[in-house]
Length: 335
Ligand SMILES: C[S@@+](CC[C@H](N)C(=O)[O-])C[C@H]1O[C@@H](n2cnc3c(N)ncnc32)[C@H](O)[C@@H]1O
View 1 (cartoon, protein in one colour):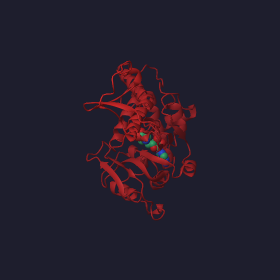
View 2 (tube, protein in one colour):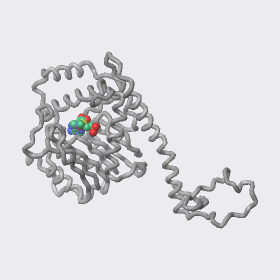
View 3 (tube, protein in one colour):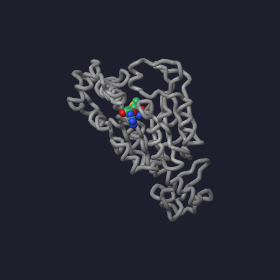
């Protein structure tokens, strides 16, 4: 934003107050301008104006968060009514519900690993829509997701304000990912289950995100287009993790930022069988670091030192993409 003339400020002690003529104490006064009232240099006034402008434009965003918090808080004291109802959206098509029911009864054998993992994933999120996440009322889900995702975002030390003009993409965005809760100029969320999530979570997918169902098409049109790329808790859910990482990174501009998370395993530690089926590509910290190293000399990370109840370790990395792998990855080297 550019201004032709510098704004005027009144400097009192260590406070800088904007001198708005309508409220000015000198409006009807013939007194001379006091010594301490000075024109502020243009660069400073631009900065202040930018801050004020951001404060105004983030109102909607903050109100949206406040609304979710209020909704979540009230949902905690008003238990969900039975019979089962989806307050967050609609239900899936009857055939899909039947497929999930068969899967839950153990009658969905013969599916390829990725298809089985995704059916399991869908069954889980349908449960969240109707029954709630971790014993919370389902209506609290958007609120819980917002708090959790913003907490992870702020671990990077980045601010929300700096995303105002950013183009952001999230790969494996789930029904509500991180992207819904970030400001941005353009926001694109890819997930193979987007069509189903669109039904189950229709009423709460209100974060201004363009949801896309086709990663290949996105990679063709979106190559090197994005300032920030998020991928959170996705890589071990796929059968081709390195291909997904390469697609994800291809969307980033050079020097664009990535926020990446995966739950890692340690060799020799076991996971429950049904969890393993839903996560067909377990990955160690060493493996994911070696892959990220090919994209960045410049990232930070955190790894939990305690395992989860399924023996996994939360790993998150954030930084800038400032290099590309020397050669395409040979997938046959994956065990
Ligand atoms: C555990 S959920 C995480 C969702 C969301 N990122 C979050 O943290 O709440 C894993 C997501 O990865 C998605 N997924 C599975 N295979 C994928 C693939 N090949 N490409 C992108 N996303 C995939 C699933 O559909 C699911 O929505």
